[in-house]
Amino acid sequence: MNISFLKTYFDLNKLNLSSLILIIAVALGALMLIIPIHYLLIMTVMLTAILFLVINPKYCFYLLVFTLPFAAPFFIGSQELPINQTDLLIVFTSVIIFYKYITERSQISLKTPIDKWFVILFVIYLVTGLTSSAHNGYQGIFKYIELVLLFYSTVYLIRSKIISISDIIKSLIYVALFEASLGILQSLTGGFGASWIDNRGYLGYLGIGSTAVWHGQGTFTHFNMLAGLLCITVVFLIPLRHFLLKSNIKNNILFFILLFGVITTYSRNSLITIFLTSILFLFIIDKNKFYFFLKFVLSTIPLFLIYMFLKDTSYFSTLNPRDHIWAVNMMAFSQSIKTILIGNGLRAVDQEIFRFLPSNLSLVDASYFQAHSFYIYNLIEVGVIGTFTIIAFYIVNLINFLKGFNSSNKKYYKAMYLMAFLFISGIFIQGIFDLVFNRFNFQVLIYLILGIVYAKNHKLYGESRQ
Image (tube, rainbow, N blue to C red; front, top):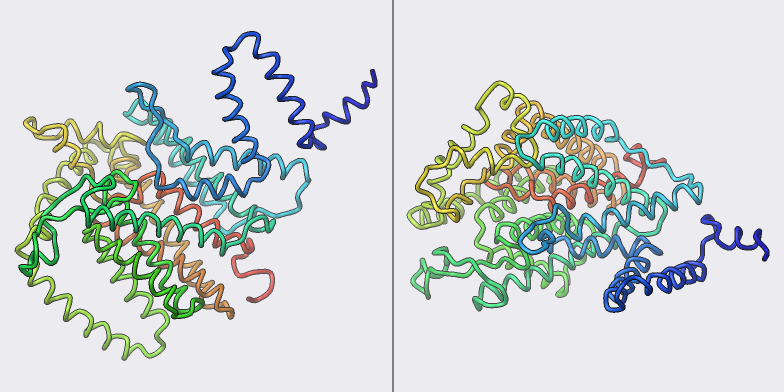
């Protein structure tokens, strides 16, 4: 037998589809001797699907984007596993990209202006993960590593021209469009998986129909998560519509569906975020600041009238318990000097809050005592040091994006930088009364957007002036 031929044929650097199929066939033939055929069949289908994704990383990457709303954990019986499909797809994508990068001796640079920040944040999460009061605090460390892997995978895929920025943004818009459509159906019918009903009906306060309405929640477990996704997508579209998209019927219908989807979630926070980021957008692009402030003052008049109309309804009455909720969370944060400085640790929020809850609460009511604030949630987990580091990280990105916007001459890059600037600004605004952006799938979205923006060049502005 020609051994040298076999060595060449199975050389990993020259591995082709034929040799992969041959290896799999030999392995499956051997496994039939010890594994029942129906299990082997399931394994074969799963392995085929994985190979299909791994052969071309962009398919795996797209699937990752499309499955972001389906972020429920895997279960075995009643046991919740610490992973879901998002984790697996990030690992699949990263492994094959790393393999390609090494074997093809890629000359593509992965440098970005925020590389050092990832090291700083890793140290924060490593310390708070290992010292966490929660038994699974270490899982937060691996989650952060996944986010960094996703960031650099995005940078590589774009710089190597395997995938384009516009295609990624389109895929995010398609996901949001599907979720918005499902949320609208849920709100209007009470079916299609709707599970949240409340007295927030706009028309009901005018005497037209009932005030009790179903919240659109899409495939998420809570309507605030759908509202967060749609809110940020609308924020994406504001600069895209201004600089790139034509004002035609198709684009107007798309924008209306997304905006109406936000409305039918009945999320106050998301509507406020859209309004404030829109004001911020106008402030940045409007060269005549006098006319901007005039527009701003005029736009607040209808908002004041809406507030006066809704101030005695459940829209505002349900905000009253927030003070009590925050008081409980702050007790968890301020237990000791250690918890104030470095927090209670990753994954420790629910456990630490629980010990300070009133004793007569049901388990359902106890779940409402989660922080309801991006800032307080981080204070409990990583303390003052970690929270200020995270905020500083986002502020640095805001500064970079604004520099990129002001230095770019092309409309495409202006739209991209301003889109990212409004996105990070939306996190700060929405984070006051919500913790959506502490959820892992929304953290994935953050690092995906960061990867898109920084992928063009490690100097941010491009090798030549854009």
